[in-house]
Length: 267
Image 1 (cartoon, rainbow, N blue to C red):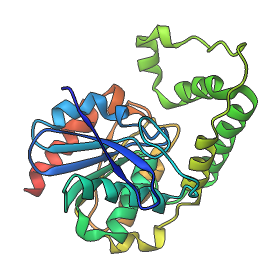
Image 2: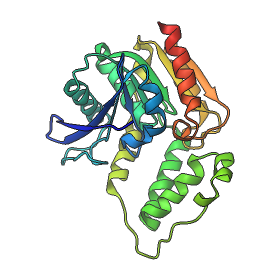
Image 3: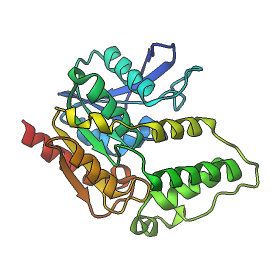
């Protein structure tokens, strides 16, 4: 499906690019740390067969610009609202993956009338010691080895072994001889996600909530998915056995099928 990019502006002037596909109840998909709409490519066509799906590049990534504003989860949530407003969407099913799940939680808590149902994929309520260690390690790898070595590490911890064996061409280290390139945008977003903590408010969420995840997730471990589900009243959990952190992009049916089944149960 070919998508056309439209643009709107955040409150601080950042130019934000978003795309829309399909017809039906609106569904806003919010990507993770990398912040790009293309993460959702493997699931958009299927979801757009029943929904008006909105995807977007978060500020500073893809076609979206940025400003000098300090990156916080609250700021990214406000950006998502600006996109909903520009698209003429009063209320949507909001699905967030990883960092996008933190943004989705913020929307549900601070702007409850804008969220009809909440879908939290491979995300957490509050960073624990493991998350802090892992993200400090990822930051250090980028500072020492640059973006390409960071990408190599993300690949080996983000994808399941079975999938990597199916994709042998991906098992090659990047050539870092060209020099180290560091992406400061990643550091600011890591700081924002590690500071995120809405655990005290999760019990007030009233939207029907689905928590998705993979049991072999090494970036946001499955026990954090479980803790999140248990903290939200009435939340439903669906965990696939294998898929790693990026299961929606490499095993799309493990994301689409439980989501569709759950939505049908809500109807």
